[in-house]
Length: 191
Picture 1 (tube, rainbow, N blue to C red):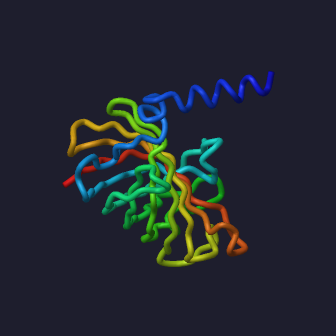
Picture 2: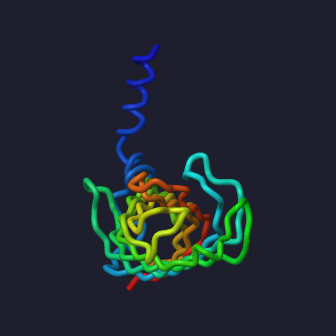
């Protein structure tokens, strides 16, 4: 029975047209025919959490991000390479943390890989590495690693909106590693 499931899965995934439409699209869902993209995103912070299962404890902690991207591929899968400038903003205390202490700028490089596309909707995963301006007792390192899950909608060839779940941590390169986690929305423009 297990062999039958594997055989049917392979046939289903490699049926002409199906994989190109839903999984690993051949056309770039991020930028289409354009070569550059700028975006702005804002997010609500959550106390500790990985992407799956998603974090569930909202805190008075926010992020704003400005991003410049260019198209690329990852093993022939459409992708985008980006430089990101972020600012976190803490506004109070919750869950034994004073979030005002974590108002810190972050700069990081990232790459998002398109996993599926259906009409104007797409999904992607991403990873990045960067620096925060200062160490703190929540993340005991300036070095940060970023992971992201994105769902986007293309209004037209130039404009899109994206919902995201984003996670920052130091990947246990320091003693303290309580992470930052955000749910957010962003808007992109291609040119």
